[in-house]
Each structure stands twice: as structure tokens, then as C-alpha cells.
Image 1 (cartoon, rainbow, N blue to C red):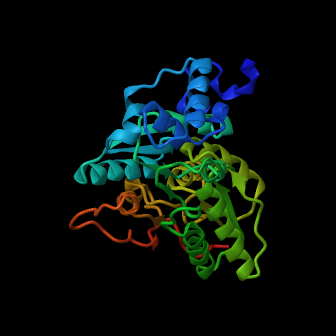
Image 2 (cartoon, helix red, strand yellow):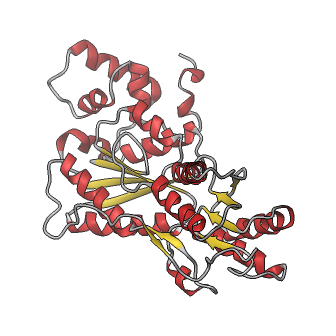
Length: 341
């Protein structure tokens, strides 16, 4: 067999999944062979051992634990982008997991490329995780998780997905845009998040849906990267070319950068243009003016993900665990006002 038959193994040690692919069996079957399970047909076990020998696969201690013991380990798959929301959810996941007697192993995706997603999941599975939580994934992650059919419970923290849904990002975005419309704004821009993020897509859909519901013409959304720097640079360009009276930014950091751009050209918020963000990061209440935004219960979302995962594992989260995170709420502050023109 040539090296090109298993391209995923190039440049790294072969994984259990590589063995399963070569042998034409499931991940669980390879695990049973590694742990000398008697509940296998001899020809199947022989095929797996042949694949192990061909790939020069060396089972690690975590792999041996798959069939013989409990690792009490939860895998977390997250994006590399260090947003406030992701960091807050992971912190809450760690606290809830520890309280239930579990530990975390966290892997951040370098990119959203399919090979990187599969490699990251392989890395987590080789550590004998008992469950997986995917935090705020890019759009490619969800179908890959579906395709892999992992032998452990999976919870997906996103506004849509095959496992769990926690907050309706579209509804939150619609509330933000509705607030601006109720103030009298009709020319409203949207600075969106990255193209491949589930949350960014749903917030953009909310903007478009609310504008359409009020018979208003939306401007083409500008796709950003969640950063204040992008909000600043986009703001300078938009303020030069657009005559909008309000902006709905896909998160608070881009809203902050946009507000900086407004001040940089000698205009003011909200007198010349109103600004709404999303997430309600701790700094939002201390900006000048304080930022109107959509609040998410990141801690509650992370804790609920662990609660749901434990339920899938047949365990109780213990006393005091919240059944639902708080709903998204519009927090109105001083960055929005009726249009002055």
C-alpha cells in the first residue's frame, strides 16, 4: 500500500482512526483489538493487527483505556480566535466539569480546513475523552462532526447544529436592529463577523430578516474578523462612502473600533450615528458612550453544555446546576438615540 492511500497520516504519527480506515472497521473495533477484547471475530482482529503493523502504529496508554477504564476526560474543540465569549464559555465548562469529577483537554483549531478539523478531533480522541464539546464552531465543523459519527457524546455550542442549541443568535440580532428601527433609523449598516462562523451567519440573517420585515432596504453586510481593528478600519471606509445613521456590529469589539472611527473623523456617537454591538463584554458598559448591546449568558451556556453532556453519559450534574442559560437580552445604553437627520 502506498503512502498516498492515507493522506491524513502524512507528517505525523498514525492514529487509531488511520488504522480503522486502513482495516475498513470502526474506531471502536480497533480499540477492542488493542485491548484484547474476546468479543471479536478472528478474521476481523487479524485485519486490524495487519493494519497496525503496516502503519507501525504504537497504541498509547490513553488508547488502551478506551475499553478498560473511565478517563473522566472531556474534550473541548474551540476556535483559535480568542474572543471573550469563547474564553468565558471554556472557563465555565472547566468549572462545571471539575465539579462533576471530570477534567478537560482543549484543542484550538488552527484553521477551519477539513483536514485540520479531523486532525484536531483525532488528537482529542487519542486521549480517550468520554465526551466532546465544540465551542462556537466554524460552519465546516458541524458537518464534519456529523460525518465522523464519533463513539462519544457530542455537544455543539452554536445557534444551530445537530446536537444542542443554546441561544438564538438570529433573534438577538433582530432585537438589536428592531431597537434601531423603533428609534426611527432606516439606513442601518451591518458589520458582520467572519464568513465561516455559525454565529456570524445567524446574526447577519437576523439583520437581513428584520430589515425585510420592516420594508427597509439593507446595505450589503461587511464581513469582518471580530476585532476592534477591523471595526475601526471598516468604520473609516463606511463613514466615507455611506450615509447611514446607525450601525449594528456583529460583536462589541467591532462596535468599539467603529466608535473610534466615528470620533477619528470628528463625528460623535449617538448624535451623528447610533451603534449597537453584540455579546455585552465587561468593557461595554464603560465605553464612552456606554454601548447598547445584546447580552449573552456565556457562563450559563458553558455550564449547560456540561450538564447536557453528563446526561448523555448517564450522569447527574449535581445540585445547583442550571437547566437553561439566561435568554439573550437587549441592553440599552447611551450609544443609541433617534437620528438627528
